Amino acid sequence: MAELQLDHITKTFDDGGDEIVAVDDVSIDIEDGEFLVLVGPSGCGKSTTLRTIAGLESITDGDIRLDGEVINDKRPQDRNIAMVFQSYALYPHMTVRGNMSFGLEESTDLSDDEIDERVTEATEMMGIADLLDRKPSELSGGQQQRVALGRAIVRNPAAFLMDEPLANLDAKLRAQMRTELQRIQEELGVTTVYVTHDQTEAMTMSDRIAILDDGELQQVGTPLECYHEPANLFVAEFIGEPSMNTFEMRVEGDSLADDDFEYPLSASHADAIGDADRVVFGVRPEDIEIDADPEDAHSYAVDVDVVEPKGNENYVHMTFDGAAEDREKFVAAVGGLERVDEGARVVARFPPEAVHLFDADTGRALH
Ligand code: ATP
Image 1 (cartoon, rainbow, N blue to C red):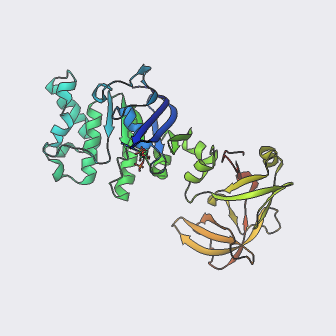
Image 2 (cartoon, rainbow, N blue to C red):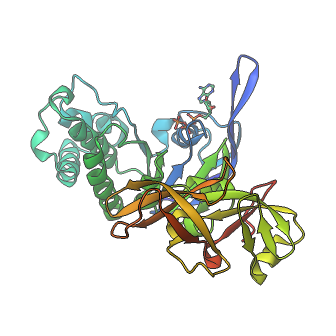
């Protein structure tokens, strides 16, 4: 059980004289027992952040604290933190039992019986109790991943670090393991930092998500906070599938305008915008209403280009009605039973209460 604090962590690499800032002044307080997911695009610094916590990389600046104690200079094996890798990293010549108990004799003062007991408990928890005498080559990918997780569990660490542990599994197994991992993490109550580039994984598994871009922390919050109240345009576009529709628009009196449409502003929108003359207007695909009242001030005639069926919903790709060649495209997500035909002209409405506004220069959320 432990609280893990990243206090202004910076990590730079020297790349032949060029300085690469992989992690840029990141601070996060991870609560005892919390499941925190680090998410962001490739190269944003997720793995480096995790590796600094594990002690596999030294930090350039800042402090890492485990239950209040600074652990910057502790060796990985002395940190009481267990890491699970995407590659599983099992010893091929050892059995499952050997892989799980390896190192416990040296690093702890547990008796052989106690080690056996821990291994049995962890294998039961992971559903691999009947595989104890097999070698990794005799296991499926999913089973190997369970062994890798079991090996982390037997160490009874203060924290788990996981780097895309489910990335090599097929979609069905991945979905199943997500739920199982969550259950085990909750049962054990071990503080966990989990890295993924998959925002669905981040949204479904975490207590809170930390979103990174270019080494910088963009937002830390519950999945719903990040979805409903994104701190900036990057988070707004990163979280949610399909991505939020965004349009850069001019502020013209009480309205926003671009070459395709004009949007009347509410008093609270106008307040949020202040004296800016340009903003980014955002609306999530699932918030757009189709077949709306054509007289409504927030309704527009649009052409349906493509309907992408997704089972329980359809992604409807649309263009504003008009003669110009380069009309803006956007996408709405509508219920699977709602019939929308390709080539049809429909009325789409952007409800004012669902509109997001961002500073056009900095991307900061205004509303
Ligand atoms: P991915 O999802 O692709 O694994 P990531 O978010 O985990 O990406 P990192 O692996 O942490 O990203 O890398 C962050 C940045 O640091 C990248 O620009 C990467 O090229 C750089 N980097 C990472 N390790 C080193 C290293 N040992 N030497 C030099 N640069 C490095």
